Image 1: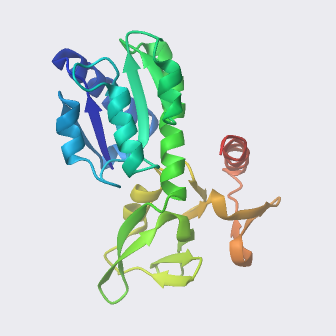
Image 2: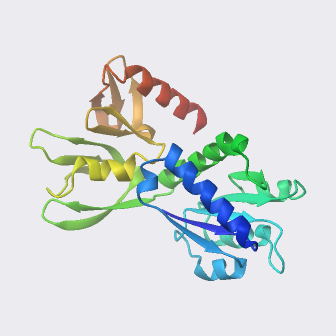
Length: 246
């Protein structure tokens, strides 16, 4: 996952980067294992690097000379309708314009501890949209064949009796290569709010749930995944919260 921070003030760049790294480590530990933050002091420099799908999120200062954060956001939206956008500014003057480009969040500088909850919610919106927009993961299938698997095609994954990781997709089932452990795949999936571990070594895509029963989840295609007794309350609470927010 690549994130860009764009601000013409070096101190603000560093402060925002520090804030974001702390937030990812505290609230999104799986994503915190594999992400990249790029810093840009000039919006034009960032736009030269930008292409569709290149960045999952851009955090933009609004008041910059020559090219504002709003101008940069309009350019981003013309190329990529799914990229996350969060604005930072010293004034609420541009808030309406910010939301006209479908921003995920709008925050006054400097970022404060009390902003953390709203910032986390903005990040969760970005991650949910990543799933629905066809974000992909690269996995090694049985036979040592690398494949790009869209997240929105994944129904579930689990370790079976053969001790191998199996992916259930909307178009069939895939067995991963022996080198691909459950922990490795979980590191790619569980940082995304759409995925949850409902049982030991069983992960489901909550967008694929058709019914939640007392003891299991019924997924697309009639797939039944058990709910851990130990995790039952947590799993059901998380799923209901996800339904309300998606």
